[in-house]
Image (cartoon, rainbow, N blue to C red):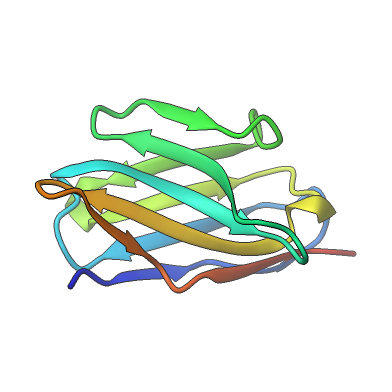
Length: 117
């Protein structure tokens, strides 16, 4: 069973920055993809950003130009750098990693991000 441990959430003022980390208990060299999702109050979970095995990235329109997903294979960690944060970015953020072979799908426990003055 792979463990994903998220960190980096917290309270930040509008316009501020946070970096979320997702540390895996297994090497992320052999992944199909990894992503960050979020679920705001009263909303459905939505995809924020995704990075493929080859390093290609894709973002939700609402975060393009402000958020950056990256990975450090040596540290088995996936990151989400969030800049120019807005109150509407307030949500619980979840890390998701899909490992190969077998398309094994794992989720982190979630980390709260609150953007408020």
